[in-house]
Length: 89
Image 1 (cartoon, rainbow, N blue to C red):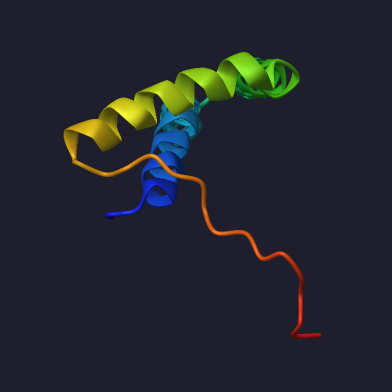
Image 2 (image 1 turned 180 degrees about the vertical axis):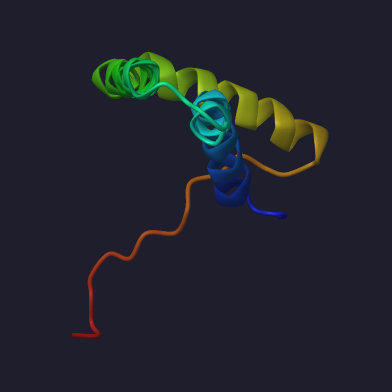
């Protein structure tokens, strides 16, 4: 929890879970209308597709929220370590 990559993953999960919580609860109700459920799934799919198409803006919002959360937790915003060359093949 003291690394920024955990914070960014947590914020991304919170963003996508927020979209799925409504559809999840509506699909679990007794006597759910299949047509309404299908329309709800299509709406969530379209939202996720739009987030994917406009990833710069969508991830920018997530990154800003994660950076603010990291600042509150005294976690430095840094780039994860990247290997220059793979030696274990």
